[in-house]
Amino acid sequence: MSSEKFDLQKVHRSFRQCLVGEIDVSIDAYLEAFRELYKFFSLMGTVFGFVSSDVKEKVEILQKLRTQKENPEKFETIQTMMEFERDANLLDKKDYVSGSRTLLRLHRGLDFIYVFLKRLGELTEGDAKTNTICQTSYNETLAQFHPWLIRKGAVVAMYALPTRDQLLEKVCVDASGAIALLPEMLAVGRQVYDRTQALYTKFDMHGLP
Image (cartoon, rainbow, N blue to C red):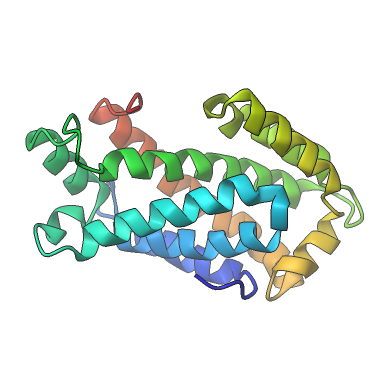
């Protein structure tokens, strides 16, 4: 994964490709979206260091499951993966790295990304500071899954965030285009999140440790 600038158009396209049938989500397209989102976090530097390293690790684990010699087709979609791991009793196997458990961490991260970018797009002034909306978005989502030390460090680091326009100019290939596309990307991103959330509910996997 490189540190080239973040392209919101690629995320939008990948999220659209995620939607399979009526309820399912393509894992290949999901990972492609997160490879691009990883660039966003990496370009933010230490502010999102606690997220970017985790995203990179989880994407690599899921990619290995998709390209392994045994049963790669079982990991084509989130539903087929959950069915396979449940039916094969792999979720409780000590030496097995679960794809369902790994993706749950990305899923929680997507909730944070969605809330933060939505509020970013709703800022009425381009020179408005982004630190408050980032802290609020984090506290409402990812923070509940992090230990106190990480929460404290993350919130403190967010004080250094620049204005909306400065942030987008720093990380985006096309800042003005990103603002224009953001509502549409968020709409399809929400569909991906809601489908994934529903699948975790269906298979009773929200509590995977």
